[in-house]
Image (tube, rainbow, N blue to C red; front, side, top):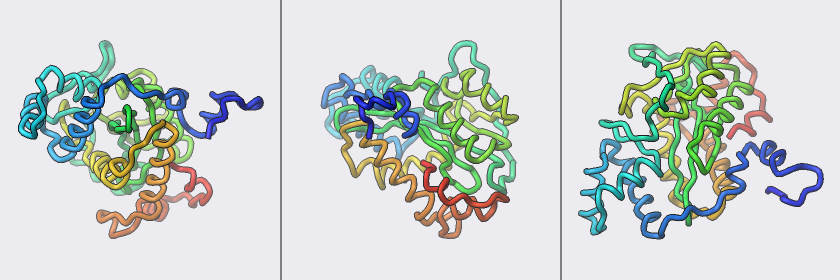
Length: 284
């Protein structure tokens, strides 16, 4: 999709038009061994089933499956590289950076009954054939519609802010944004964008996996219906695969919590705005 030798548009301009970060275009396989990449895939699959597994339990699980691993190795893969957050403890990738402000959880007891009342955002790990990427998604809490997403090969905040900017530009700001306390979501770039848009900021309690349960369920569905069925080689392949599935999820996939209707259908039925057909096709 990207033409490096295009004389009219630079690589940066082409990436912007395609809504991908430059880092995704320049993605190259990480320097992990095939054995580590296989372990990361197994950790990711197990974590979807048992999100309360910390380093020790995940190590025991892998040993019981015949893998000779120690806790030091699993801690590096689970927390530092994959960015996974066990329920009962707080890994490095989900700690607010030094000096970053955290915010209280605002959703307890709140009745969420309309689109754009509450949005949520989260990051997940994407296994590749010879490496890995990260995916951020912004979801409307009430209708489960994915409003924007981005792929990156780092856990910096930039790709999260890009997705947030797209969502606000297309759908207007929500009343509340809920995330975990990860450094991406406590960063000045993220919180300042929300504050300037008049959005109230809500953050899960430490290790509280269930506070953001709807987007965690999205990850599970995405991985079993799309990610684990492919072995993408490049960032552009991953981008195309995720885009196709997200379009299907928003516009075609029946959702049990919505009476069998797709999220985008419910979003526009319950939203005062008129549905822009062409715009809807570009979401995700």
